[in-house]
Length: 401
Ligand code: ADP
Image 1 (cartoon, protein in one colour):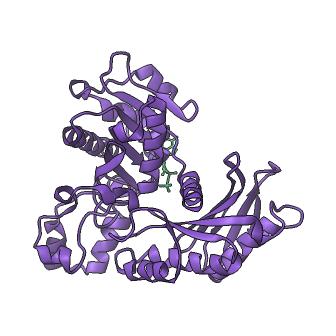
Image 2: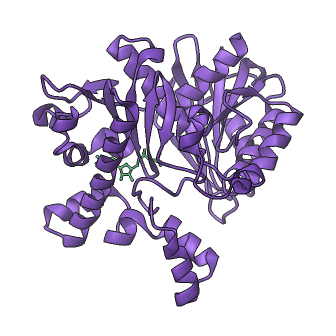
Image 3: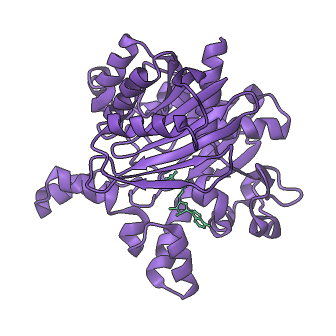
């Protein structure tokens, strides 16, 4: 069975075609700068193992972008399928499923209209996801279209953790609550961790730290999310590349009232100009680590703030869970920065987390790497996330159900 995974953003479309028989990737690529003057599609035929092909041209909209994806997959010489009907299902990443969706869902007209109605909760993402689905329905009419929601995994969070302490009607009328994001990644690494620990997922307690450009940390009890650091939006929680993470909301009123800033300006400030970028001028941790080696003070501060916030959440979630089997680091920073992992775990021995500095500096070796010291009460693991594979697996599960 072949499953195409599509992650449509506001100006890009990432895609991977899986052969589910052996879970291999047949082709992968990304369409970028949709709607801009200079767009490009990068397509890789993984089956042939040839170098990626980059085609630069203006891509006016998602329809044109997905047409190019289909053409690349079907290309007589470089393609991997001979007809669109070879694709059994298309799995779509959809950012916001609100309270309606807690599981992968086969898309029909009703599901489309609910995803559309949730656009006010995710104005940058859901409209693009919706367009991706609508175009894929036309291009692959025989395939089952499945929606996999970033928020779904977190629907198990109990009310005392997902509610904000604000008047009830804001929840009841306006659906203001914690939704959480990165759910597909948190679930994927949880499943891999449970398998590695040789425990049923339903009995496994974890803290999963997804540290990429966006970053979130989740408390997983019995394989279910019971708390997570992002909230109503992907802005709160950990410090991120350009997002502030947790701040005192009174800062917003102060900036508006006393410094005359427009709400849209404050929005941009907190989402695009804050985090590592706001403190150091760089949003990529690799650049910050390079600058730290040269004793750059702003880089040091950004790094320490970033790591300290993660550590605080680990403490909080250890308390929330009571028993933790493993702490999992994943995504770009989590998988690659031994420095962040080291800094985060400093001083956590009393809570049960003791890192082995040598294993930590040796980093990732395969899908799961143990980096805790012998005798550490709680295991510390690096696990490579694979959101696309998880979307393909969940789409397959829906088909087989
Ligand atoms: P996204 O959230 O866009 O999926 P990733 O999970 O790929 O992003 O994470 C990207 C981030 O990972 C980069 O911005 C960079 O800060 C960090 N990163 C990647 N490789 C390294 C590395 N070797 N050392 C430190 N940080 C890294």
